[in-house]
Image (tube, rainbow, N blue to C red; front, side, top):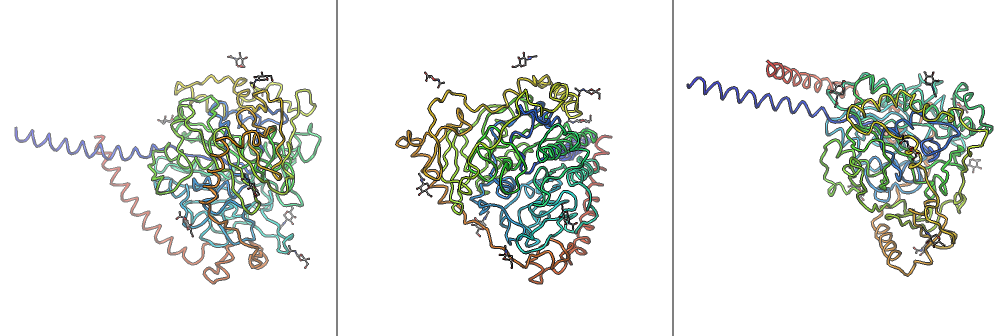
Length: 605
Ligand SMILES: *[C@@H]1O[C@H](CO)[C@@H](O)[C@H](O)[C@H]1NC(C)=O
Ligand SMILES: *[C@@H]1O[C@H](CO)[C@@H](O)[C@H](O)[C@H]1NC(C)=O
Ligand SMILES: *[C@@H]1O[C@H](CO)[C@@H](O)[C@H](O)[C@H]1NC(C)=O
Ligand SMILES: *[C@@H]1O[C@H](CO)[C@@H](O)[C@H](O)[C@H]1NC(C)=O
Ligand SMILES: *[C@@H]1O[C@H](CO)[C@@H](O)[C@H](O)[C@H]1NC(C)=O
Ligand SMILES: *[C@@H]1O[C@H](CO)[C@@H](O)[C@H](O)[C@H]1NC(C)=O
Ligand SMILES: *[C@@H]1O[C@H](CO)[C@@H](O)[C@H](O)[C@H]1NC(C)=O
Ligand SMILES: *[C@@H]1O[C@H](CO)[C@@H](O)[C@H](O)[C@H]1NC(C)=O
């Protein structure tokens, strides 16, 4: 009897122990997260919203098998938008609200801010950024592997040439400099390789080599495409890709179509790699652009934000709307269009919630909202308030709450204030030949096959109606029948729009409503946010950044100048130390792993 009791207790103890080991091992079931961020992609440069000039079959297949984020908002430019993605905060709250970081200015995302990479890394993820950073590099401390990323393969500055990975600053009386690194080490061996291919290959290689059962993957594929290159050759694509779009007469638009096509292929290759690795069914995939496309002006690419008003670097919807898509078997409403307004800064708390990471959002002072549950079940949760920007240097405000949008002032004297994009109509000679068999072209992609196979297995809406989704994702300028248009001239006076019926910002309601509570409340909120804003971090050009002083490299020049770091090409003197430390950690973790596996083994016995 005694013996049996003892055995029972022993069995119980062992069972509990085994239970602990097995459940803790299950923390590795956390979803992998793959964010593919396009750079300066116009809202209408994907085909899932109805454009037929050139198709994006892989992105569209992702859209129709996932959830289309119809009302996704970003900041109007690269640096602020990426800062919001990384921190979950409005750029006005981190000093990132004004313009971007040119390679020659010594500033970056403030070092006391916590990034999304830190959050996921702290919760057991392997964090990688492949491609563009653009959050500062004048000091090494600003660079991605010092900001929570385990890996960075790509460039630190604003953009690079698609083939030789240089950024030309001769217009500033500086030189042209190379900007491409493998972690901290300068990597020149890729000169000559088309950057979109380079980043795609790095991403698929990481996916195929990474053991996601040990550590879930957080991959931020931050594409160059379809941002312009240097001013002398802004549009660059492989000639054989450009040839596919020979029916497009304008050579710039034709080349741009090829750049977007390479981006689309990149999305396809990443999804194929996840499927081949067998981890697609435990992955959250997100595709979006950092801001609207530049149709005109600086770094113009022929990008189209049709039918919206404005473009990149403007207060209008054309600057701050992104054609975004999310897919994951965790979502219960795959194959739908979600109409809830969502802000790029919502992604941090939303993805954290998806991964079961508890955040102290109060303490973190996040502006982003956790919309995971609304997204998962497909309902509208909140009347989202979004500070698009308060920029007292450019002197404009763009702010939205629910259907109301307030604009006062604009950028660059209003040169981007028009409806800058047109769309090829159905009779145009410039339509993608694949558009004639649109549905088949989408369903023919490996992306469609991989994703719908999982959708079907999860018994979710695997039979999406592509025609209907494409109609629902389209933007209709006049849902109401606004017959009387009052023009908005933001340099003359403030403007108010009802974005629900007038997303193209034709009809200014400000004067007719200025005495009402709607306007009074909006103005109060804008005043409140202006009060809470951090001063912009921007700094003047520092000539000491000049790449000719550092073997033609863009590097952390402030550290080199201060003698903190005399090796601008690599990971300075602390690398040997790191190596030893990593070795020690590796030994420790192998030891732990051994014990866990031993326990698992005896548990199974
Ligand atoms: C970072 O420091 C600045 C002042 O330098 C401050 O305004 C800001 O609130 C700090 N941010 C955090 C997250 O502590
Ligand atoms: C890189 O290519 C650009 C044109 O795209 C050219 O202006 C520049 O001189 C090249 N730089 C190097 C270092 O080859
Ligand atoms: C570059 O140098 C030229 C000649 O010295 C000068 O005229 C020009 O203003 C300088 N440009 C900048 C951006 O500093
Ligand atoms: C994903 O697929 C793999 C291979 O088919 C399977 O072993 C695994 O259990 C699946 N995971 C989930 C979360 O469905
Ligand atoms: C609009 O901006 C102008 C110029 O900055 C300012 O004088 C005015 O008070 C603003 N109007 C409102 C309603 O905020
Ligand atoms: C679909 O793929 C098959 C096989 O690759 C090909 O023969 C067919 O032409 C494709 N159809 C479309 C509409 O792309
Ligand atoms: C798909 O949606 C379109 C447009 O709403 C509709 O005409 C068509 O009947 C639908 N097809 C199916 C199979 O439900
Ligand atoms: C459309 O216009 C007519 C006449 O101006 C008006 O009676 C009707 O209410 C309007 N409908 C909407 C949805 O605004």
